[in-house]
Amino acid sequence: MKRHDEDLQTPITAMIDIVFQLIIYFVVTSSVDKDMVDESIRLAEADHSPAVESSDPRLVVINVNAQGRVNVALQPMSMQQLENLLLSMKVQSGSSVPILIRCDGNTRFDYVDQVMQRAARVGLYRVRIAAMVEG
Amino acid sequence: MKHRKEEALAVPMSSMIDVVFLLLIYFIITSKDEISEAHLAINLPAPGSSKASETKPQLLEIEVYENQYSLRGVALSLANLELALGRFSDPELTVIVKVSVQARAKDLVAVLDLCQGQGLSKLNVVTLR
Image (cartoon, rainbow over all chains, first blue to last red; front, side, top):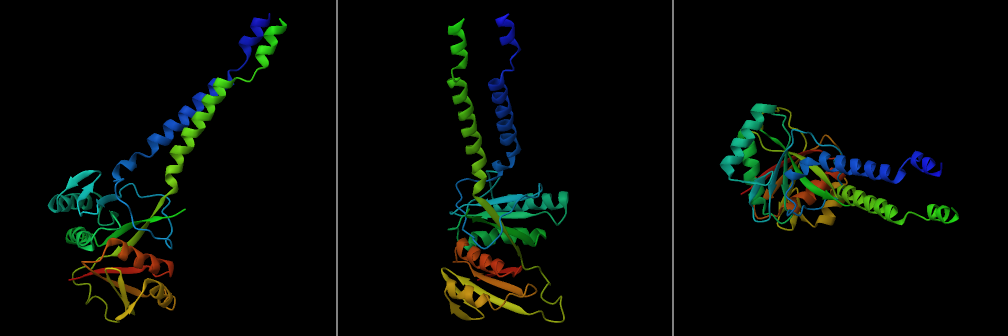
């Protein structure tokens, strides 16, 4: 009789375990676009600007590190390859395709300018520069 | 019989620890988003855009060198630039930021950020050679 009662109890802890596992799974899989971001880049700080809440899925992220090396989604790129990529993105998504330049705070503007020139040459005149917001 | 009941009342430590660890992992993963990014939108010079408008819009020129800034040709520190920009909070005002190739990205971001803080959103970036 006693045994039967025990069997009927809902296993709460096991259920909570499963729920948390599910939450973690969805949190991890939903932030796939983090792979586009080069973690070695230390962005300059901007404390007056609003932080972005959601980003456009078409966003093209161009990482420029402190030495001026360029990569897109951690794939190193020459300037010519970058231009080809931007051109194909423009053909695919139109000239409103958002371009984000994530440059290290210590990158010389020279290198950032080269990236901007390639964007402008393709006809993409609106770009964004990423900065870090504290808090 | 009595012994068994006492056992059932004991706090299930190991499963509690399991839950605590899962909570910990959950918060570690989600807290990564706390450092958030701002995206400063700028316009690049387009060919032929200089002759596009007949009525010349009001312009504000800011020059950026390495750790040095100047507003309409007057050299200013970053703190003074912020004060000076306070007088130009007209959102229609077109700002032209001329950046030296020697400048660092953080110098440019600092200026763009100040403009953004003053509500100036028509930001154009030109390179000084």
